[in-house]
Image (cartoon, rainbow, N blue to C red; front, side, top):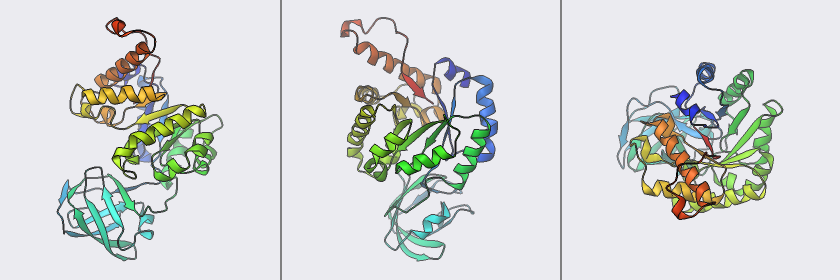
Length: 328
């Protein structure tokens, strides 16, 4: 699979540290390098909250009361673990805890030391290691302890590309740069309200920026995300910084071999916005046919390039070589 992706000219192989233990990085890097010379990018966890491991997919019903505790045990229908543990310092009675995109919504009813109790106010699923959004937003370090260890391992392995999740200021970017060798390529991910507010300084401090629409949609209303995307892309273009877009580009291809027309339209409009790269995530990480997903992106890029140089009557001619950038 890696060889096939390499043959399709992907520009980066991204290792998501939210799903990759530090102890596995060296093994994964060795595997990728045995099949490809394409650069590898370490994508940090950043200032985010996740639930821990669950005994199984749990369906929570409205009115259910359950405990919230630091990671270390297996969650179930009566208790859910959250990490990092520092999040409990920010929890207050009335705080809202939203789990995953279509998961449950909880409201904190009491806080006691390192734990809390909560009530389910909107039913939904809770699955292992899913992103959690908390309102009001807790103050968290821009890099976790695991991120720092992972960056150290990556530097030792000669990795030069690093993506900084949930960058909220230029200082976050500079911190990441201080932990990597001179000449490293730092990609700042704008995926929070704070990141949007400080986009100009983040863009100026980074080598490139990435709009992660999925995590951004947890903090702003879904219907506004397309407009945030356009604003960030426009600002990056003005600053002459490469800008990439990720999340849900070909979400249907996680389980199907063909995308929807809406997804093709989304990619076309994203390219027309002025992006420099398209990032596949679930489509190539857990999808049933990563190669077809990349082929679809390649065809979309080729169509975009042809539309900018030809007429509609030329669209059925043979594909031209693509100059587009992709990450998998």
